[in-house]
Length: 318
Image 1 (cartoon, rainbow, N blue to C red):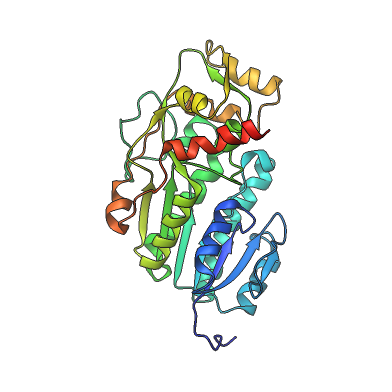
Image 2 (cartoon, rainbow, N blue to C red):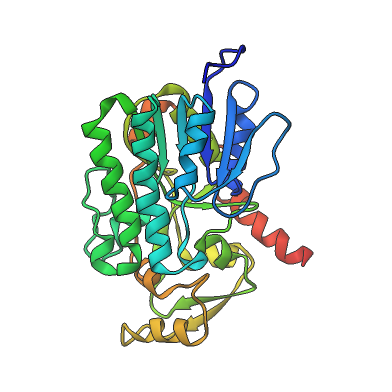
């Protein structure tokens, strides 16, 4: 299919129903032709933005590449653990990403941005104070429920080095919070009562969804392939963050180690306090974001109070 008369680049954005993707699309659609894709639903977009509901690992996904001349892909569409079972999540996150990258090769896509997560590092008492991009990805050693996240990253890294013409950039953000975000940490801090492990309050990093959207747009427009942590240079203790978000703390026994997992399962807390993330509420996982900040000249514009105040105000309004 020939390029449009406008000669704008055409950018495919996956996960278009999500809050982060919506912000990325809003920042790009004036200067680029956007194609929106999501596995959850067909997204209502501005006039002129084609939108599709399709799983990336299914056959119909290739039709999008046939019908549009895709120049770049921003891959935000990941299935969270609370959205489906382990098998479907693996199909969507790993097999779907492999299918996406193969289609990028087949149809000559020149740039791919992949949204990953800091969870891939794993939470351990033996983690260094700051984890840079060369640290090993140990999450799958801790729990099988993060295997899909680690394999997605490993797959992306293989394509990054094997097919440099794809210009792949992998972004590993810390906890992304803010209006519309539906990840585990946002669901947790949206609650009036939040479980905390007795004797533990690890340091954590938080990033406003608007700052993450700015980071993704910078990574796309500057096109400097590689692997980057995305995080501010400050952090806060988890239990302090809980209080700042207007939540009341519910102490949960942490000894023996299996007990909080049993409690989470018994009380059906899987969406916001999943057993496989218990270690992240025990041990700090602080990532070093200097490489991204220095490469792209990025600085977050929202501080911790800006982030936490959204959750406080939401509770007051409720």
